[in-house]
View 1 (cartoon, rainbow, N blue to C red):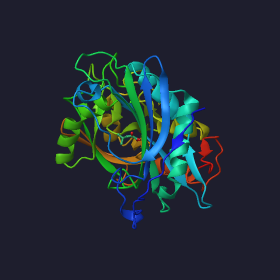
View 2 (view 1 turned 180 degrees about the vertical axis):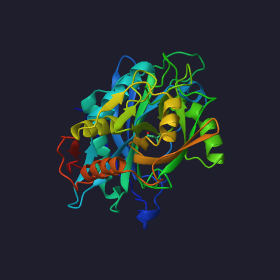
View 3 (view 1 turned 60 degrees about the vertical axis):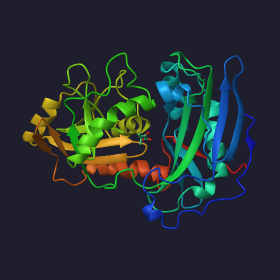
View 4 (view 1 turned 120 degrees about the vertical axis):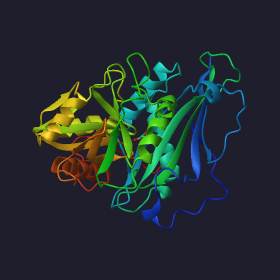
Length: 359
Ligand code: COI
């Protein structure tokens, strides 16, 4: 159990007036959680302090070699004012897996959850009230040794910041267009694809920018070896409903094990759908589209929730999905996930964790 020291801000910021215009990750709440790690001592000095800049030596390891990992979570406000989290244990465990791969010391699951609950509790007034808006939570750990040698750092900082946010895509729940990337790759066996490390995202930016210039919301990554099989999209996992069955890439090292992904798979199976986690060739996706069997395509992610795709382009060939509108399974998943998260539907799966008022 962490002993968290709380220092409240003397100058609280004005909260956003119009919650319909929050955007994603643009404004931040009054406080942040911080904890330090020193080799030989472990994690220490857990604290909540006013949100503000870190002073960092220019030779700090993370600035040069990107020894950094992060998570993405949300806190939701229900109609009765309860503030709640969705499967925080999954994020805690995934951060441990990311930490292990990046040679970063792990944070015990109970400490991680305690820290998330504490910062959300202190800044609970920042959890939006508007429909579809939530408090996006960004836990991250970065290496703070000073020096230019390429080694695991002996010092780290764990920080959690919170951002009242709306939909991740400007399109909201409206279907997006996705560019299938045939040149750059995101991951390959043995690399860091399964982790949430900043470097994965840095390496993806170029392809994302090029796709955006052509009017596509994001890139769909193919496997890094043969560039043949679908893996994931920039900020979410992706699922394909073809001829009644749902296909998605297996999380075998190159694909991020998304919390929304696994939740959607559980729901789909509960509803009687066959879900195939494995290799799906992009050529077969395009063929299914031509044959009228590509019924629905949707992304899943914490930020994006469940996000319909209306068009894919691969090597100049276009696949149009359904009638360009959100499909029934995508809609049902979206309604069920957001229903549980915002407390409109009962939590039949034991996924919801309330944030009690302690501070
Ligand atoms: C999330 O869905 O929480 C993510 O971390 C994706 C992010 C890169 C926007």
